Amino acid sequence: MRFLPLILANLFRKKLRTTLTIGSFFIALFLFGLLAIVRVAFVGGTEIAGADRLVVVNKVSIIQPLPISYRNQIARIQGVKYITHNNWFGGVYQDPKNFFAQFAIDSDNQRLVFPEQLVPEPQWQAYLKDREGAIVGEATAKRFGWKIGDRIPLKVPLLGGDNCEFNIVGIYTAKQAADITQFWLHYEYLDEHRKFNKGLIGWYVIKVDNPDSAVRVAKAIDDLFANSPYETKTETEKAFAAYFAKQLGSIEFLILAIGAVVFFTLLLVTGNTMAISVRERTSELAVLKAIGFTDRFIVFLVLGESVLISLIGGVLGLGFAKLITMGGNPLAGVLAVFILPNYALVLGFVVMILVGILAGIIPALNAMRLRLVVALRRV
Image (tube, rainbow, N blue to C red):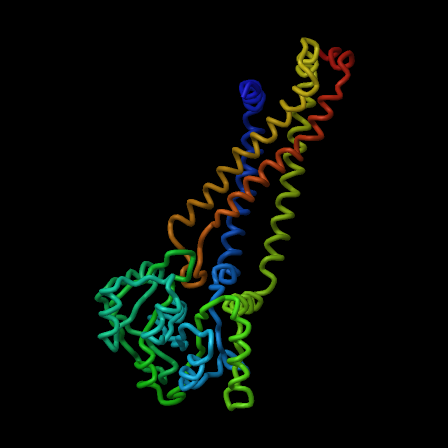
């Protein structure tokens, strides 16, 4: 702390230059925060997926259905604790651009398999009693301004383009980072109204009694239906989510590439700024040495300026990115998860320190190596 007054005095000597350098850190760390948010949005499903859940789809493709009669056979396999099924609904609300995920669910078992998705009990009971009832995620309800009691019209291609209306009887939230954009309706409603694929579902989701038995249970399921008209492919929810993330391309590689370019540029800009600052203060540093300040003090003085600049700009940048996520999900129809994870904040702080040190180390060493006699000639 004894360096701080001198460091601040040096920083505010050239206010415009200091402001621009801090601004470059602000933009870089703000961009870092946005990239972290986007990464979680696209691949976060693989990180929050349940370790004790399996997804069973048609071996040919996920768009091919499975018989609902498989449910009881799967439930009898040792290690299966709960089983539910989902079916894509694909309704259109007002405009095709108003996309949000809609699923016809197994209402009896949905909450047993997905306990992290929370619905108040009175709302859930109202849903069970209303064949046209629907539960909507908090993000989607906020996006469209829906509230409990609203009647929502959807045009449904699966039902030949017919218009269907649903009563919003509940809004679900989540106790952890999870998708709160979905729209749930009764599977029975879908099956009664469609003209084809009756008695078929989209996929099963299974909760196993022990994550260690997941591989064994998955193999048992696929062996059970081998050589049947509807063969299955069973994998962990994590692997299932990772498959969809890969369909979007190498998002993580793109993020890392952009981040590397940004921080390398930032390193050059900050290093150049500190080099100019040290050059301008050669005579002052020589005086400090002449009156007894050590080389170690000079090194820490220059490094302190560099690190302080990076911290001020970086904290402001990450803080602004965090503020955006606290304002809600502006892309709820596109990005199900919109958060800046804590590990990104910690990593960002480490990056600030590292860039500050790397940018300042060469100017600091040059300042330390100043020959006192030569430097004092400039006084």
